[in-house]
Length: 501
Image 1 (cartoon, rainbow, N blue to C red):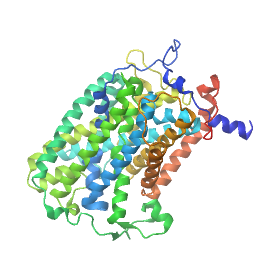
Image 2: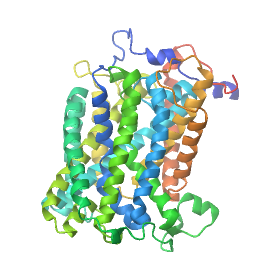
Image 3: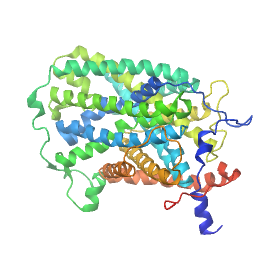
Image 4: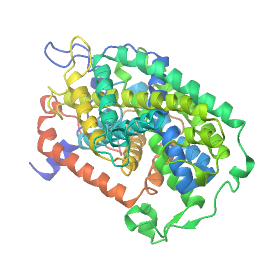
């Protein structure tokens, strides 16, 4: 095949109308559709269920102590703003193209097959690795609350993390049973979690001391102990000496805590299962971000006000803060909140990865048998179970603290592609019905793309290297399998998008 023919094949796109109606009139024996059972409340429940978790219960302490100080509040505000810009882009595409696979499917319909595969591979990294990180965090909170053996539930001297394996196994069964069972469990956990988060904000506010908030932005310090691989990418490229705290610390913390905002992407993955996606998708996405950003900022403000940032616990900052101010009894409540919060995060991530694999197999980029929908449960059982096994193995044996940044870079990369897709789709499909329109196109999506790149450059060099290795592995799978088995090979091809048309 000529170079021109190969490139045309790589950037071929799915027809928008085909994407929207791909579950209608499906021949017997092929992929069946997902049931439409979710309301706006369910969408926000899923979104809040995955967003509020690791960010509040662990990342706040680590990043306030090591990078931002009390200005961690600003870091979360910056991360929330970038996420909101991305949400406005997601809202247009999610309402116009309601389908499983989210940014993968959007990319497939706009900028081409190879880019869509890269995004899907990136999303699998984001949610699977994120779930494994959270599983170990869940096990750690369980150990801290009940004094369980560190070797089987903790992070230090861990042989095999039984706690992580156990919770992933239980949640995999729930996710495989069906979206109805998943949403009931998730919504119950969200109610409990948000209630205790509000408790933390209200009660903790009485113990805030102004002296703990001064200086609000700690003076910039030399990061002489940082190796070159641990430097933010922009510092390494520019040759600037490594530093912590100050403005640099705020931006580095914002890039890392972006991990905490990765959840709203899961809402967009549920488009095919939403009763009224045109109206509920945009509201679900934006509502999730608004609620979570406010809660994050308030919890951060209370936390650094209760305890001097240098004295914060990195493992269990909130429960430890109540301990330090003499409210040991509150530690139990916060422990319950952490366990509930991290449980709901893992459940939504398991559901999300299953839907992404379903979308890939439906398009032929992965073997169709992997993503086949169970006729009784109407869920991709095989994909969900396979994902659960992978996450359990990672959670059991791999210390993932250093890899948490990869979730942030994966999320930001996906948001970058979605912002570009909005601009491309406005030019290539100007007559597409858009129940929600992103304001100020192309300027707002362009701003969203730039802010994503800006935060990505604040992540460590080693994070970039690991991310590039993962992408290279994904490209290899696509090159040797996906492009040869794509469903578009069995259908009339659509030429790649032309920005000049």
